[in-house]
Image (cartoon, rainbow over the protein chains, first blue to last red):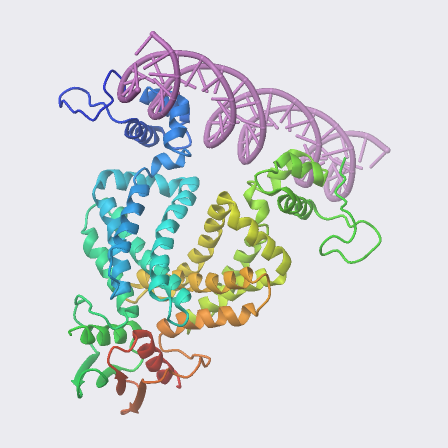
Length: 260
Length: 260
DNA sequence: CAGGCTATGGCACTCAGTACCCTGTGTAAA
DNA sequence: TTTACACAGGGTACTGAGTGCCATAGCCTG
């Protein structure tokens, strides 16, 4: 039981030992999550949740527009963080910026590993939650795409590039994130996601600085020869095995170019 | 009371005199769509739909698992088409294959321009439908990613590549599609989507044949020099302006490599 | 103390979705 | 022809999410 009995002073005053009186929203989210993991999402009614939280049913829908929202209580805040980050970003390297923005989401997950892992399992087996999660992810993608669209406003196909890159970044992020979630919170999620994101970045980074990715794979090599003032032409001599995977070639070039 | 007859000449039915008796599923979808466009999605109840279709309420849920499904009655079939296409595809150029698969969806939309455009407007202004559409799109993306994952099974980071490319293809497709839908069904959707997809393909195509995209951009050039038996090493000399956009460089290389 | 503001509880209602059971019809076996 | 059975559809009642409306309790201000 979480018992949110409201005595006086709904203020944030924390005394310590006493059963901590959470703000209503937290209490509801916690009660909901407990019940969802105990007996399953669809087996838990909103009445069950408010009963455990010890509050009125109507209050639930004041804090969560729907039952699904109680499963993802932290994404609203996180989206705000991301948009704030993007707004404050200078934007000399837009692709790097959206990659960093994606890492904000990752950090939100890793801040509560147990919660994230259990929620992941829950989400995987409840179709309704999977669908809802899509709309959550979509909001992030829209934020990223919006940012990129503004950056690419004058470029040809700016909107197309923005949307494709945003989708790729989200997909890469989710790939790394899911791998970590599946592992049950072991592994290093940052490294996983960095690798995934650098994959996208190597493909699309315009010409900006890249914080070095690993060494180029065996079999390809790029020899860089600066020519002239460094502001115009440059000759690159590359040796690659025939039929080398394109991404290897790209990675080779990119990692060489980004050594400033 | 089986009254599934519709007023004459509505929709696909030819100008035949007798009121065409549609199969139940079509009748329901049509009645639903009429009501949705007349008074709005949320203002229409399932009872309204079955009343207009002249069938029992229970029958609605036999043919559509949810109310939202009645808005997208053709996607199930389309997904089947796509998976069948992918299964039958040899796979010597996986990226091209998923691009072609995406075009199947486009064709489904363009087969009924008026319906698609109206549905697009409906979907844009009803949040619940937007969310549902995400789950529909996601199914396509999963099909594409699954295909690519199988193709890239032995490649390093095969799963990551598969998911990122699938996401990019879907994003590109949707960009072109939405542009057409926003135009109200004017413009040439095929051209629009082809352009968007070729953008993705130019970035990721492995080494396969590319059915000629436009010429490489000004300022970059690739000189290809075969060395030896053509099965192993090869030297590529590339000249590119410093800070040239990465995708231009890649496009240059790719278009050269793909001249077989 | 009056008035007003906010947060919450309680109640009633709509509507999507489901479980269960009924009926008519067509078809194949007896 | 009769019987058996499968199947498409109809009807009813129920659960549970989400909403609108109003009542109440605490608190702040004048």
